Image (cartoon, rainbow, N blue to C red; front, side, top):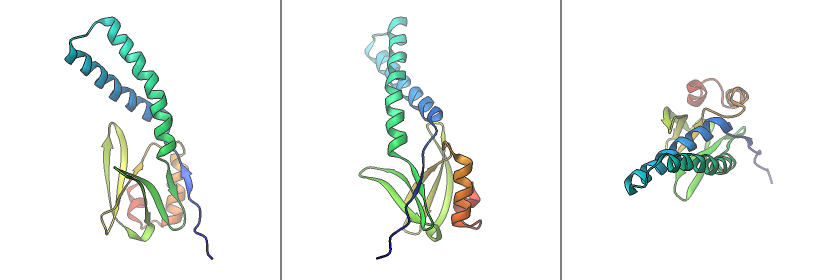
Length: 148
């Protein structure tokens, strides 16, 4: 029985994800405070401190739960769809790649002929190594390799 090659995993860099989580949480918390009418300098400072602490945990969880994996067959990454967190697309099945910012974080969205989409973050902790290995595995003519 032939085994599939294991995916080499690449994880997001901490700082960009933490920054986006903080901005998102602080905005939501201050917005809800404004709507409830409970606003003061002390409450704003408490909200910011709380958002920064919560963001630390959210960032660690999101980095661990959403790695990008590549191997000789294809790429596996997040779909950001409910009940279907990850999807694998073979290198030869990648039809289209577009760029998108999500909460200030740049992603490439690769899709295949069945319109399955995966989100490839462009803020990985080993971004250069990832890009080189992706080009080596997929070939320079691959739409995803060209988009990098």
